[in-house]
Length: 167
Image (tube, rainbow, N blue to C red):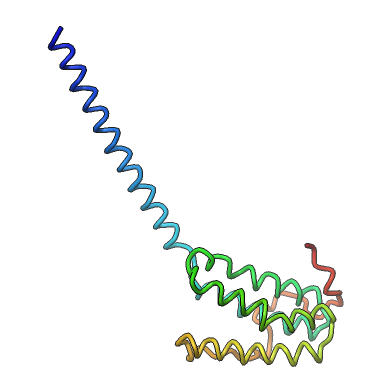
């Protein structure tokens, strides 16, 4: 009987010990998975590429009277930076501040469907982008207005209203 009890005690100890090892291994595995996901999420460079393309497309949409497309490009240009909330939490507020402050006049011009105001504010934003790049040590990234939109597969001259964009 004592041997049997001793065996149960040893077996129980082994199970408890192995379960805590399993929990530790599972925790380490989960952390590896989280680290893998974080490593796969884009930081700033990939979302900024989308921001740049949408920013350029926006101009050609406004110029062509496709104000809904200009509005859409602005909306999704902003959302393109969402991964940075997680991957660059210290820098993300700078993006939000830029979009809500520096970029707001562009959005107002889109809402008003005012090409003269849009062009003026759009050019100011280009200067703001370049100043930000300089300030962050990326002065070698200079934004310029392209001669043609980066995405050639869109009809930019489709007449639309800024308010036509679904919520």
